[in-house]
Amino acid sequence: MVRSALAVLVIDENRIRASIIEAGLREAGHQQVTVIHDVTGIARRIAEIEPDVIVIDLENPNRDMLENMFQLSRAVKRPIAMFVDRSDQASIEAAVDAGVSAYVVDGLRQERVKPILDMAVSRFNAFARMARELDAARSELESRKVVDRAKGILMKSRGLSEEAAYTLLRKTAMNQNRKIGDIAQSLVTAAGLLGPAEDE
Image (tube, rainbow, N blue to C red; front, top):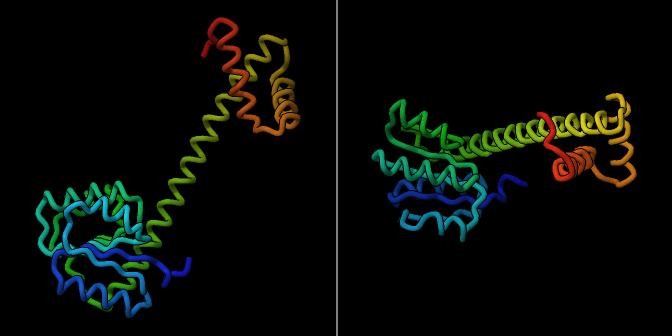
């Protein structure tokens, strides 16, 4: 995706500050900029607009407003750059936990908008990639456990060695053009239905 083609949503109740952000974005080449001044029903508006990136500017946020924005950032699964005038350690930690990609304290200047937006997108993409890799690793580990159980079932029921049991699973998977984990899961499920519960 070309950076300049990003659809950017700016959420800011202060029109003057919103115009600073919008000017910085347009100067950086972002033409698809939508500005919202009223946060009422913001989740629905985000769903309608479907922005690629969200910029939130909170002039003097109270704790409730910050928490609402953090809940929003957890829900929308998009890069979020948040500008605040002042903050404390708890708010910074809450922003990180909520997945805010860039949390900028007392840094709202037009020339800083583009690099902060670029950094928010890069950080979001890096975290998303790490999350996908973690999910893939968990899935692989789960698949290995199922394959080990299936091998155990074959070894016990057919008197096969571990290597022969694995070879049979692999050959069956290849013949059926399926993943070995899927074949193993089918075997484990069938064994559970047909016989006494396998010892874990």
